[in-house]
Length: 224
Image 1 (cartoon, helix red, strand yellow):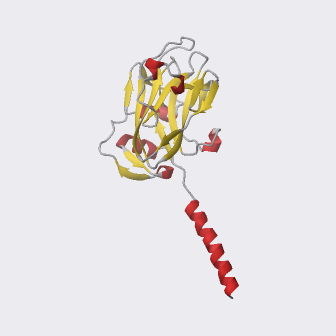
Image 2 (cartoon, rainbow, N blue to C red):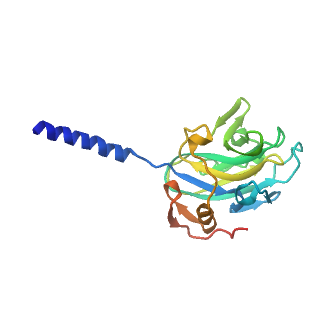
Image 3 (cartoon, rainbow, N blue to C red):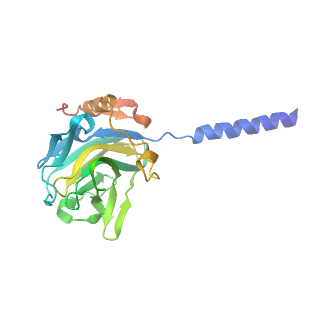
């Protein structure tokens, strides 16, 4: 009997440890056009195939290049400390319209890569003339490498997607703590739902799996 009791307790301990070890991934989906600030020449435009019918870009024809001014800025309340990855729902027509600048503070330094041209913050967007998911990367001289951002505490962060080339199109952003995923299906990426848009518009904090937790101190601007 004593040995059965010990065995039962051992199994229960392993089971409880497994429960404690379970950790839900943070998943947040954002509409690009609902950014807290959009500075021209980055603008909101319409496409029936985009999420909720809208996207952002520096308006221009493919092959024009250019860019380097304008951005979209998002205030994101990360619900817990840890490592995060970003995915973008994008269109990149060609080699002259396939990049953005990306900084996410406070994990990144307070630097404007549109001025410094620091390739650590250059996102080489995967090419494609239809909407597709691409993980945000460093586009360095030696190739592209997936980026990760580490936050040592929960709270408010500022993500800026800056124009680098005309005609690169951004529809939505997916944030996850699944930094090991290298393909969209591995990261469980998804477009924003009506609930996601409500959270983004009203300025609500989110918990793991995107469930509402607490409200922020101020409301975000109205949905266009």
